[in-house]
Image (cartoon, rainbow, N blue to C red):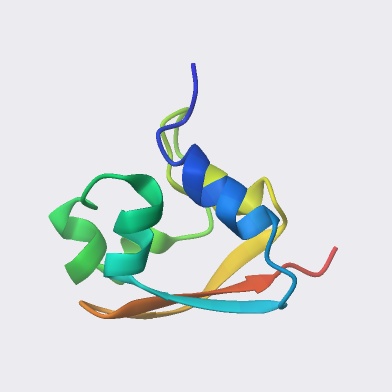
Length: 83
């Protein structure tokens, strides 16, 4: 089963900058659907942990990124993970 956040994974995978900041609207444009309300109001939605096969964190962890900062209602910053 394909993760519904695959398009975000693909976008982050081709970014060359080690730090990528995206507004929620940009993420929704990439995904082609609206983020759930929790994503805008609860920073823990962006945790760098995989809870199940539908987990949004798969999208950035698979391409060696992690969320470093969330500004609720505004933007998310992804950084290249140090292996």
